[in-house]
Length: 326
Picture 1 (cartoon, rainbow, N blue to C red):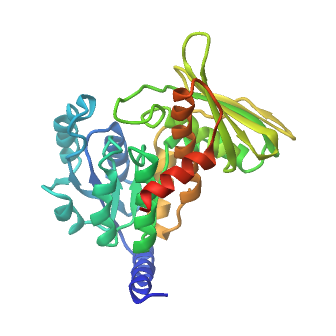
Picture 2: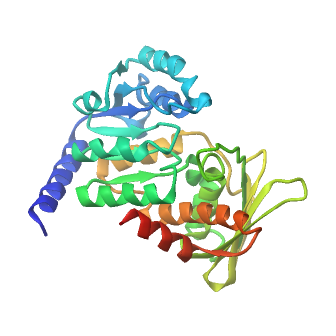
């Protein structure tokens, strides 16, 4: 083990010890999503919920996307609301890092995440990255590579992963899942692959149920023109995401079926998991699973470009890895 890597692991061990023993100061990068208000209201409430006791948001850097109107228009309002919750607004990421122990990377736009997370890693701050983790699979790989090199834990997830029924299925409530279907809205944003922006919610539910091991992806449209993407897992298992107005789904396993998966249950289940991560340094979602999720969504775009042809996850991952690690 190199000296720099040893120092990074030592810093992480020291952080975990301190986090378990004292209050944790959290910082937010990006005030252009409703998530920051939901998280801050819970963390800065008095009294606090037991699951988040001792973790408070103390500082925030407002800048997020610069060219997505739906994001930039929110910044002034959310900045003022977060300030009213007792959060100091700071002029830069460096200024933020001087005041906090951990970071919520909340910029709604995935494209700046790589640039924004690098100083956090250099400062040895564990980071939760809200969806989408990046604006491309290539950048997602670069983010995880940088975190691994720095020895700093990070993770990214949609709140949909932590629904009770969805987690129950993942933990074996219907046995080995042979078929799953999930739905969520899938509004598009021109700078991101189609499902990155909002379809990630339903895709995250799908992978929570099915796990890793997706081999190929095929994209089509429903009779009413909605996106539908079917993945094939080892053992002829299938999982399908379909664009819809609501959140839901169904899982079929060798012990029965559950038609209540994929439900949205608010932000607290995700926030509780983030706080546990900040306290322990243990990531609830592996980099490998997150990267496969984003490879699935990029493969869906490639399938669309090929008029609905099957696209393998390996093809998409190999191409992205080669570009990310030039």
